[in-house]
Image (cartoon, rainbow over all chains, first blue to last red; front, side, top):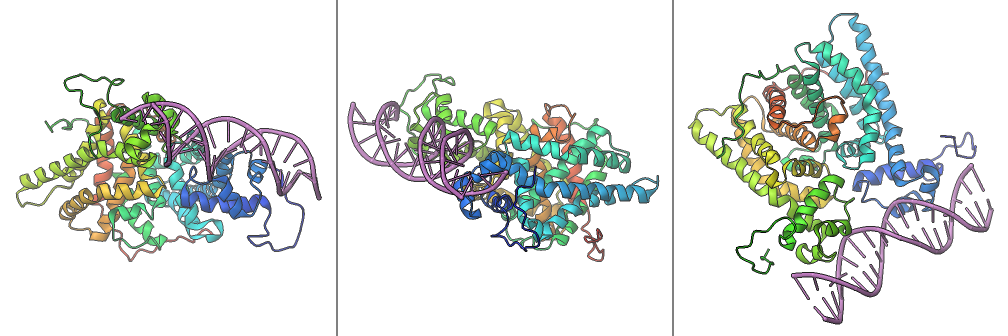
Length: 236
Length: 236
DNA sequence: GTCTATACCACGATAGAC
DNA sequence: GTCTATCGTGGTATAGAC
């Protein structure tokens, strides 16, 4: 909470002379991204940051709390931007029904902007985030759900307005699918190679051009009539 | 590879009297699902299985190879069924163009069938699988990509035929999104609570009814024209 | 307050006795 | 095939230096 660095005003700090907390955060972001949370040891992490082993426990309390600090540093501003963009299109609409595309883009663009900003962790951070979504550790899941609760609630109302043919429950599922496709893609790089041959996702605009038509069409699709019967058991 | 159990023919084996390898596999499937790979210790795993600590290393070589064995036990039959279903609809089509829905269902149904079969691990296993997809550990990623390479290649050809408006590259991306939404959903339970309030995914047919319209519409959507310009940088 | 050195217990893995 | 003893390394807690 409190600023812990001794005041050295006016001095430009590079990566190795930054204060201890920031050095730890930067090293942790990189290593957690490369090897995952469990597989990154505090010993290699503190060595990479050039600080003492005990510094993590002193400044953050535990390895888990360090992980949460790594996430909030980037996530809070990103979700803030998402909410601001949503508020702007709601204001511009001035009571008229919202466009599904615009709402979706307001949600996707801050994530892509974060991905292109190397000063804010760039792709590394988003891959870390995509992995965190699927992590089984309960402390990560509950932390993320708390971080996202407000933002998701706002967007759900907006989508509900833009997609009046969907019930609240149906929309909840679809937003779930959207988040799945998004986080799986952002965690990317290796996952992409599952399907071979595609060049690296070097251009984020290109990624958005691929993702948007898929998601918009999926969101707009009419729900399946409950009259249709599925044949799950036809195998034998 | 070789069968390592001493021959005790004709004896019905329950969960606690099954042979050591099976006891370890069952306990591992449950614990890896609940806590993830790294967070599950061999000590608690062997205690739950009622075997000695060193038995895992003796029978499987390492914790990593045990994990792979847990996955193949369920995955090989599931992907086999996927391929058989695809071959059947190809045969039934008799040269006529394939339906996108049918190809997609041939891919989804074996996964759902696995989820309802408690004798094959039920939901537990699919949640484990969904998590494995997003795991950063390289040995898991390379293992899964090898397991899936054949099956995915077959389905890509089928979808390419069912969706002639998509280029090969565009389709690769969309299958990537499909797998993202699917694995994220199957990993579910906790992730669902991100969006609150939805009842447990107790009915898999219901899940398929929600998922299918979303995915089919996304797959069928026309690609975004390259004439449209995206405004990624309109924030400031 | 900030940082360091160090001790502690649990972990995965393995060698060798049985 | 199974077990015990042991090794190197992991996260964490703390006492004391600056």
